[in-house]
Image (cartoon, rainbow, N blue to C red; front, top):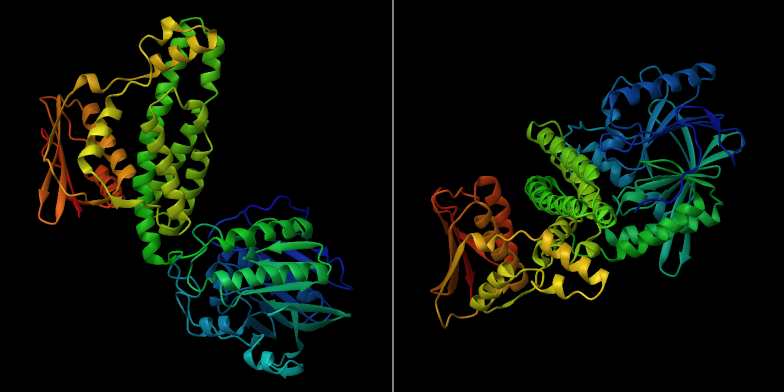
Length: 578
């Protein structure tokens, strides 16, 4: 969910807060990453406030420099407010001496977040997922505590550091069955800081208002792939919080929203984004838990998927380059230029090079599992948008395009926290194998179409289909050796057909002279086997390829029970249960 527009707000510059009497804002706006959030300093008559100190040392040190200058000009208590306790927002609090130059310092966090900080929870702070270590941290002010919500009123308290805090808790029923709680903290000069409980991204998430600014925490990215499903995430709570923030935008006359990651945005844009986000969040049911185990598994899949995408897209790009080159040699410059526009080769090379860098960095422990998953997700999204699939249809084999589309989609589905879709039914395995071999052998053009074309368009379509075809099936003898009368096993027939074509294509491209595809009954199961042979064959089923193929086999509903065979007779066997 990308916001549509940002508003001009200069980072690292002290500026007035519109809608407030005597407040100034110092925004520390970062390039979006997983290391640290944005931070915001608010200077008011009677309080210095720091919203989210962030997760990296240089940011924390710069914030303290600014706070020290403001404190020197007018000594005041400092309150560190957390929009939530995830380590990219809170880790700097572990530096015990960071705020040592201030006489009165308090940490304000919603009650559930306070408990997570005090227990050093690796799950609720995401320190385990993000590869950080967080020490137990005491909070001084438990925002919107259960006591305050049970008995909303005005209260005054004195912290151990001597700071006096006054706040008033209020509750409204903003729609039938939906209540919103807030706390208003006077900070002098007629100004207030107002805190709203907006759980969903995490149980302790809050939004904070000053003047006509609203600080959103991570609300806008809470349903993003690789974020939705993290420990503490709640679809129901998030949907309710979206409704609450839409109410706040209107009732509090918000002009600008400041997110935890990314640039500030005008309230109208945020309102439209939240309405889309609500509909999208509603669709997020039965998500995987996005924890360390998920990140490790999906990072492994990222290696397999990106390498397979590179293989398939390189085949597609190479075929299109060949087609364009031949058309140009034939004097069909306009048609050649049209083919070149179907796929931006330079952009593809850049994305694949970027993928290689990320994979190498992950292998050398330069980036975390979850970082690789997110970076791979962004690359796959760009790869999916890179070429005009519908325009390529008719030029390349349907099964090649179908496998490429399925792989791109499977990764994005996994990235979003779902399992790739399967259509598992009882299937006639022999019929599927025979049909798959027919598809592999089928030429995507009519031999007579070029000579029989009646129009220029028909001629050009037939010519391009003929030029772009690479005939692997003529290079190899394919033998089917299938038991008759086999029971129909449970499988995803479409995925299995693509697997059969893929395995056959890999063997043919690896200089196999013969390929045998066989089926046989085995107790309560049926086994499919494919074997390649030939004096010059190179085994295409090595360890890296097998990891991807085993995942493909699993998505078909099968189990790999044999492979990858010897160097001269590579083989894969798959068992399906009946």
